[in-house]
Image (cartoon, rainbow, N blue to C red; front, side):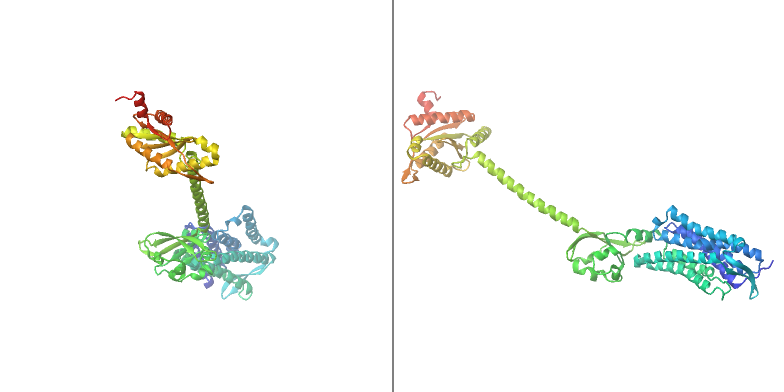
Length: 546
C-alpha cells in the first residue's frame, strides 16, 4: 500500500534516526551522565519517530496506536532530562530512592491517563482527523490533565536548566565551549515545544519539538566526538581541580594562562578567571624571581613568599605538559599554601633555639657545678677530690709512658698561731695568698690542690726528683717572702715541704701521698721552713737502697 508522507513526517523521521544514533554513541561512553543522556536521546527517538505517523495518510486507528506509543517518550522526557542534568553535574545526592519514586509517578500516571482517555477525557476532550494540505492529521482539544502535565513538565525542565546554569558558572573556561553546546542542544527543543504550545491552534497542533530533536542530537554528537564531551578528564577536572584547595594553572607554550581554578583567587588579586589569556611572566614577576621556571622541561619545585598582607608562603610545583607525540605543549603549575606549616616551622625553630640556649645554659651550669665540685670554695684551687681522681690518671699514664711523677706536700708552719693572734679572717687571707702563689708558679701540666686545712699538694708530672726539689725550693722562697696585708699588719708565714716520686717512692696514689706526707713531717721536725724528700729520710734512716 502506498503511503503518502508529509515533509513534516520526513523531518520527524530524520530527527528520530539522528537521535537514535546519538543514543547508541552515548551509551558506549563511560562518563557520569552518559547513561541518562542515552535514555534521554532514546526518548527523543520515540517521540520524533512515532510523531511522524501524525503526518502520514494512514487510518485513524493506526494513528492513535502510534500516537499512544509516542506518548511514552513524551511523558518521560522531562524527567529523564532532569536525571541527566543531576548526574552530569554530580548532584547524585538528590537521586535518593524516595525522590526517584516521586519523579516516576507523573510520567507513569500521564501515560496511563493518555491511554485510557476514552473513559474519562482528562487528557484531551475530543480527537478528530482533519485534512491538512491533502494529508490526514490528528486534531484534538486539550483537556485539564494536559495542562497539568504541561505545567509539571516545564517546571521539571526549568529546574534542570537552573541546575545546569549554576554549574556552568563554575565551569573552567578551558571546557566551557563543550558545555555551552550541551546547553544549546538542550534548550532548542524545549524552546520549540513552548512555541508550539503557545501557537497551538494556529498550527493545528503542530509540535516543533520532535523536529528539533535531530538538531539537538547533532549538537550532542559533535560535543561528544569533537570537544570530548563525556570524557573522564573534564569530569574528573570538574570534581577535583575545581574543588582543590591548591591553586592550579595551565600555561600554553607562549606561557599564556589557558586554565585556572577558583582556588588561585587566594594567591592572586581579583577574580581568578579574569587572568585567562594573560602572560604568566607579567602575573607572577612581582613575587617570583625565577620566571624561567616556565621554560624548564623537567619538573621543578620551589618555595615562594607571596607579597600580601599578611604575607603567605607557597610551595610551587611546575610540571611540563606533553602531548601524545611527546612534544611539550605547556606547563602545569600547582600552588600550595604552606603558610601554616611555615609558621609551625618558625615556632619550632624558636622553641629549638630556646632549647639550645637552655642546653648551653645547662651545660655551663653543669661545668660550673663540676668546677665547684673539684675546687676549694675558699682558695679556688683544686680540692682533694680532684687530686684523688687526677693523680690516679697521671700515675696510670706515667706507668704506660715510663716517666716519673713528683708530689710536693706542704704545710704552713704555726698556722694556728695566725688564727689565734689575728682571727680566722686573717688566716683565710693567708690561705688565699698561698693558693694564688702556687697557681701562678705551676707550669703547664702541673696542678696545685688544697689537701685540707693548711695543707697543700702540688703535682709535677714528667719531672725528676732533683728538679722537683729545685722547684720546691723556689716555691718555699716565694712563700717566705709573701706578705699578706691585714688591717694594720703584714702577715708572713713559712712552709714545710715533703717530696715523693713515682714510681721510686710509691706506685699508687695512696702510697705516694703517704711518702710525701712523711717527708713533710720530717721537715717540720727538722726545724720547719724546710724541705725534705722521702729519699732523704730513707737515707737518714739507712733504709734507702744504693
